[in-house]
Length: 262
Image 1: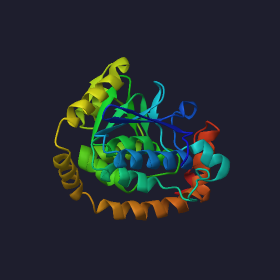
Image 2: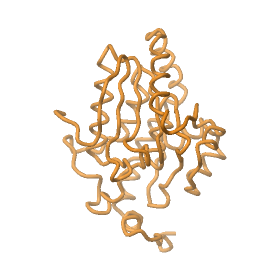
Image 3: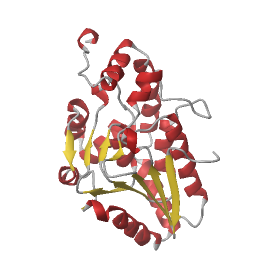
Image 4: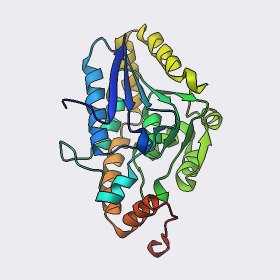
C-alpha cells in the first residue's frame, strides 16, 4: 500500500506508533482502515529496529469504536479494499503473532471491535478518561472468536458475558480492576507513558520476548478456528434483515426493533 489514508505510522527510536486516524468517525474502522493496519503491523514486524509497537487512536474521544456501522448502513458492507476482502480476523492474528510486544494506548472509547483490538494487545495503558465496552448485540453484530473466548480468559466468564450481553460502558478504574488494563494515567500523559513502557521492554532480549509471546498464545491458539466460524456467521447476519435493522437504527440514531427476529 503506497500511502495511508486512515492511519498514521511513525517510528521513534525503537518504537512503532500506529494511530487510527478517523476521529470524525470515532476512529471506527472500515475495510481500508483494516488493510492499512495490517500493512503497518507487517511493516513494524519486518523492521528489525522496531522492538515494540504502540496502537492508539487520534484525538481524545476514541481509541476505536469498532466497525464503521454508518458505512455498513450506507453500503451494506465495510467499504472497498485493495484485496477485495474485509480482513479483520487476519488483523487479530497479526496483533497476536507479531513477535514484539504490542501496547494499546487507549485514549478514549474502546468499544465494539475497538474493544477487541485492545484486549488482543499484550498490555493496555489507559487514559483516566477511557471507557470500555461492547456494542455488538445493539447493532446486530458480534465477535464470537477472540472477542469473546479470549476476553473470557482475561476477565472470566461472568464478566465477559456481562460485557457482551448488556453492552454497558465501563470506566478505566473498573477495567483495571477487572484485569483489562495494566495502568491508568492522566489523558495528557498517555502516549508518553506508553512510550516509556516500550523503551523499557526494548532493553529486554528480543528472542526471549518472541518465545514468551508465542508461549502465551499457545493456550488460546485454538480460538482462531472459532474466529473463522464466527466471521462466516457474521457475514450472514450483516446481510440479513436483522443486520440491516441494527445498522440502520444506529445510523438514524434510534433504538433498533429486533422483536420480529426473536
